[in-house]
Image: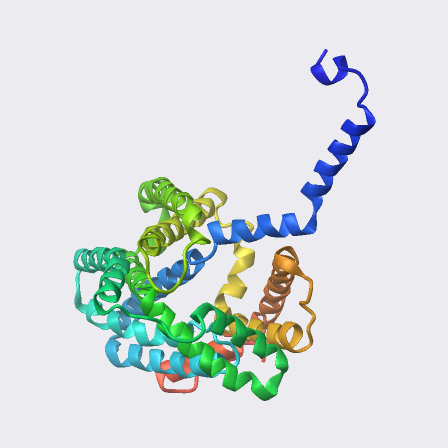
Length: 378
């Protein structure tokens, strides 16, 4: 007989305590806090790094395609980046968080890698990671040397006020976004995020040069080791970072700030590599079953990315449908939007070879109009 039964029925005060504990667990605010914490721990910065990794891999794919077709890769890649920058700049006018224009500019650093060996590419990636780790200490040292004093409102307050201003509607969205884009660019340099992006670009280019994506089974051992080692490093660094995260000011840089940024510099790339390896291993285990359902939305990723901004800006910022949703509601809304996009992408690609923005990007890359319709389904 267990202790609860042996002790007899609960007294009224004990019953009340149990109910209070259950209410606390089911409290929307408590749930939102947990969802937010999980998002910070497992997603923030990591998915950005994973996206950068995929960008680097695509560089390898584009390079292989150009070599196979006998094309001059450099000019083609520059046209591709120029078109991406234009799309990203237009997107940034609506949403300050756009990453396309940043990738287009930073992607130019990959051009020399087209002539490098895989070993040299990964060596440059390692060097960039070391610079990224040292960057917070460099910023702190320079700040102490010049005794920089920040005047005016804190940057995070200015950023928050700018984001709030987006809800005023179309009349102010372009002006507010211009200010926020400028602040975001400064933050990327100050915190060293641009170095994280470059590091993942070169790691992705290395993976592309090895051709891992062509024969996952051959690299099963490498993927498994990457999952274990990078997963352990990433989770360890993220756990060590958490106690300092919310107690550290953005400006001026302090020793705690240096610690937080240095831990992030390791945690984000490590976990993104672990996520990518885990996905590849699951794909191998399932032989692509179930996961293939995601392929259509992957082929229309650019269109899906921009259309999410248009939908969410109108629905949540202008119409105010997001008020009171909280972290849990936002997560549910994101899952619903993505599910709908998966279905729409599948239906679209039944008739067309590319998504709308993918087609524009491809035409700009190759400098000619490309057939859009699927043969026989015009």
